[in-house]
Length: 465
Image (cartoon, rainbow, N blue to C red):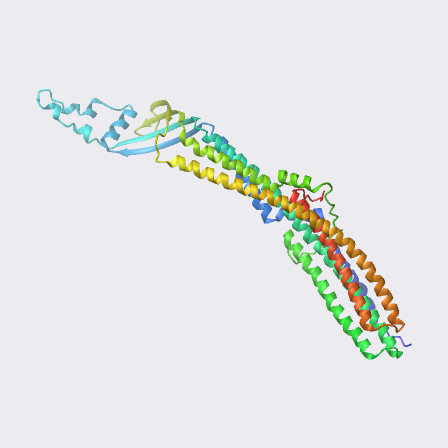
């Protein structure tokens, strides 16, 4: 046998290429499942929205609690007017009013019609300037439950937002699990395709040897080569699926597609242990989505309280300190203390309409909550059954794969002995490839369905406990 001479340059290039390949793998950001979840939670738009909603709800709570406290207002007002009433009032506020402002200079006791004389200074005063500085405090004493209602409503919305955030986080965990395990599943398919290619190449070699020995006809060799080309296409598809799965994980984690990324070991999702009825009851009680709806129902009930406040009296206190001056200054001081009670006796049904509208909103949420509770119970049962079905499918696929491997081994031996045809051999190999692929799909489906059951119950955490 004549050996082909090896180019020394090639011997130098091959180690270099191997080192470059290893360098690419070293620079890839390899994440385990917990790290992938953490990264997704820090950048996922739904989580960011949920966090913003929590911030808004907390601000609303502070706003409602602040309504119980006194309001202190400082103001400076500048006025210039020749309005008769306002000008005279401003002079009084400045402690500058004189008898002459009443038109005393025009009063003539000798004039029998003096009482009918219109004093010019009073009716047509010169413009008056006023600089007013005011400090005013107002304290609500009783609002018919309006302030309390707003506070209860804000706190209920805060709890709802927090539960919404918990639900969004669990959904992100579920999405990351599917994408993360999708990479492992794609690589498992790639491994199946690689095994199929190795087998197909072996068949071509065996068939070629048998053909040269006159044991099989040329059509058998052509069939083996056609099968090999088909398997090469399937392998290329499997390799593309790995890249596609990594791209999907890139997008979910908010990473640029050009940034190197790899995944660590696969994830074990443990099954829920116990009785289905117990998990259904637990889900109805603690599922974050249902909890958010219940808090929205509490907020709707508080809105009724706010609307009903219009039927009750409103009471408050006021304290005010003023200074007034015709120039910039604080010469004339005055204070005002007061209290007020008001009660709306008739409004044409405005308050009653508001109450009815709030009650309608509450009834709508209550109906949605009842429907959602039934839906969650169904989702738990459905996910539970699907997980059990997936477990049974894995067992069946493992048995089928073992059987297909044994069948393929026997057919391959028979073909080598010239007992059977290439068609039967390729058919047996195709069946083996299919059962291996089905087993990969069954393992992926089992993990997804177990995670889906935890999501329905409301127990999906990054550690999958």
